[in-house]
Amino acid sequence: MDNVVQIKSLHKTFNSSNRALKGIDLSVLKGEMVALIGPSGSGKSTLLRHMAGLTWGDRGGQGSVSILGETIQKQGKLAHTVRHSRAKIGYIFQQFNLVNRMSVINNVLMGRLGRISSWRGTLGIFTQEERSLALKALARVGMEKYAYQRADTLSGGQQQRVAIARALMQKAEIILADEPIASLDPESSRIVMDILKDINEKDGKTVIVTLHQVEYARKYCGRAVALKNGELYFDGPSEELSDKRLANIYGASQLSVD
Ligand code: ADP
Ligand code: MG
Image (cartoon, rainbow, N blue to C red; front, side, top):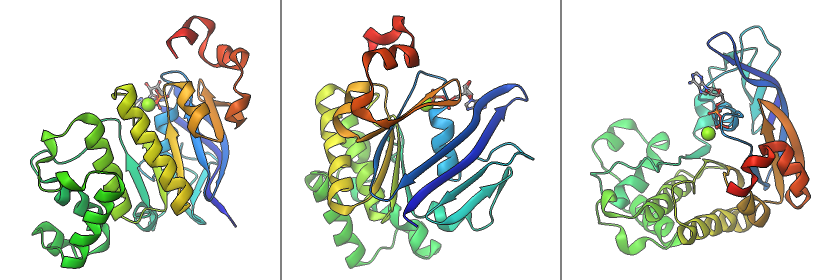
């Protein structure tokens, strides 16, 4: 089976009445690059967090989530093996989530933590081989010359590139990126999306990315999945996101923003 993500009948209710996801069915194939779009509050981040095994659906529901063939949750309960699946997922956040006071290379090496003994990682002891892999990952995102700088001396776009290098170091098979370019200027956004596309095309990694701006979904992602009020409203080639469809998804008044 080439389904790397398989979600069935997923429901998620917050605070007993806020139905953030209302029965989502979604399959993603290995090597796809999928844009997850939809208005603010439509459930994009919640859906992504379910794929990463960071949260679980409603108890008693029929929902299930499988990642790389392993069921990570079913009927509102996480599988105890979820850690193994989490290690294969690189999660990229809008706010980069680097350790500010640490050097760039050490931030990248943190991607390794799930894979080595914890005491070695805690003490910051990495092998020469791991260090050279980290430098390679940084080179891949064009950041090797910043390796020994503190992370907080970098611009937002540069920090996001380091966060991607960390996911590469982790040898993540699936990259989940939640609004990775929402805080970036257009030039940095383009660089970050180019890198994600490159990893998708050259390494065959599956990339699922939530995006605010539909133009990036059209340009970079073959497939778009749109949520509206917690329901899957559209799932198909991103070039089929016509203005009319977008108006239905976002509401005509918001269209100009995107
Ligand atoms: P999006 O990422 O599309 O903006 P979210 O997935 O963040 O949407 O949110 C979907 C809905 O779920 C919203 O109504 C939001 O307020 C609610 N929600 C998300 N996370 C939580 C949470 N941890 N606790 C309570 N409500 C939440
Ligand atoms: Mg969100």
